[in-house]
Image 1 (cartoon, helix red, strand yellow):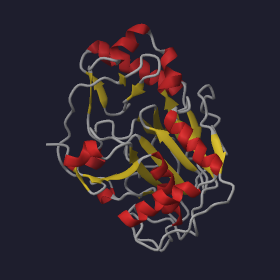
Image 2: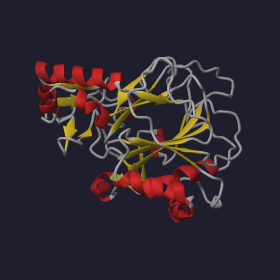
Image 3: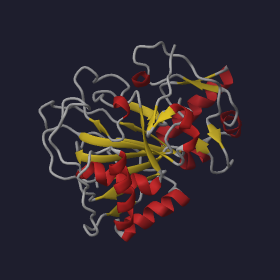
Image 4: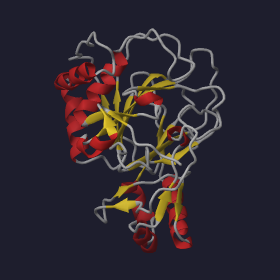
Length: 323
């Protein structure tokens, strides 16, 4: 594993690594990937994961690592065609990587899609797209993707974010920073402010589809246990409701940057991020747009489907944002 680039500090705890030993690989079902039958089969296949991976996932749910992440290596991804030009470009690949991703997802909870994100696909392709290189979206490349909680603005945000690498790029570093590491760097005044509902966040542009962006209701950044809190943070979209709250956000952002680490994902790597503990981002890189570029797949996992029932069709959450 190429863990941290020379430009990133090493003071933050790196995710623990567990390697798939090649045993106990369940057969990929011959049904449409992303269908309920496929998701159900993935849930059944979770019992066939190697014991080291199964137990690491159980432990991660019970008590996340201080890094807020877990890296599985050697996961099956199948034979690959060229990297698609867009996330929704049809490909001829088999469903091996989708099954690996959802098998791990089912051990963590319930995989869901979000209707504005690729039409609600349960598994989404993440590839660089020409024309979006400099935007704060997952298809960007030549700009730093700023630290954020996935869907920080969403009432039904995922508890876990999963990324499986089909084709890597050594210059594209997935960055991570955990509140468990960051908290000791914060002043008492900032800690207290972050626990108060004095922060609002705008909506990611990928969820708006042409609608006007609006700030959500005021909410805290930190919640729960004062020593091991959960965190909702977006360096690009979040603002304070007053000057002191903005000061607290700036101090938090500095600490998040100071205690970051990063992983250059390679083919077969599956990164699990606890979205309530760690924020993530990505360093800039230069795609070639020749069919050999970085190709990840992503899945979102919630702990319980019931809270989203009024705004969900099957596994697709349909909440509408913007004005």
